Image 1 (cartoon, one colour):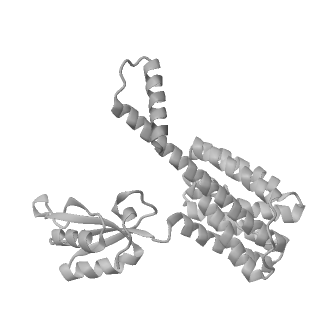
Image 2 (cartoon, helix red, strand yellow):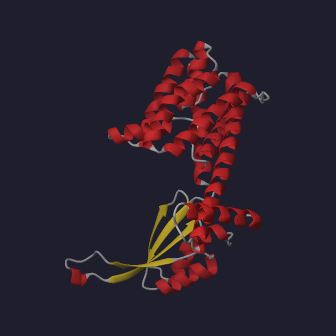
Image 3 (cartoon, helix red, strand yellow):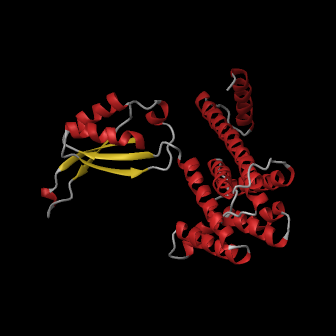
Length: 324
């Protein structure tokens, strides 16, 4: 933040604090408040940028590919597209009306900030679909299914990264999963099976099949956007040579390491349990084979288990480039 702006904000915070009855205001407190304000503003700008980019990407997928070729997608967007094709009602109106109950549900299920961002995102998408003119890219059905799904999925994924949704299916899935024995993935799958079955009945089986391909393309793109290209892995290594392994990870891979104590669970009494040290680090999928090879040269009998990580913030892995 610009030093002049920092000084102005600090002065305002000091005046507000003194006006509230606090006689003295520490510099540490003011700096903490300034940091909180700066972080909040930075995240807000980032979220708005991601949501706007997502809306225009989704609009391109809809108007440049799917709508001119009478294709549909899964989820609430698919219902809106199918309803528009059958009834002739304007798609922007349907996007708002059909998503409305799910976004209202999101206020209680996820939070107020999420609900406000999602309402703004869906309203903006309706405006973009209604007013922005996109070029017709192709009428080849395979290209429409793949790239229409790609741009729509990219838009949905960017909106999710921005803390909102363009499709209320996930909100419904969260709500139903809490009240049934189904997982979120099961709910979304059943929801889409019903949509594509109706599409096959009302339109044609061929259209439904291409629409399933559109959905698969969009779904994989959403995963790619939300989870990222790196696919982070959390790796746990149990070995008596933990110090050598720690040094290797730091010096050769350039990654941070956490060491925590553990006790072996193989034994009938606590006296038989051995003390261990577990080495934990976060790497990318591309580094996993190299890490295993390096660990094997130190301790071929080391116990390694890997868990997927959806996203990370900060730490060494975000600051350093991959080493090969």
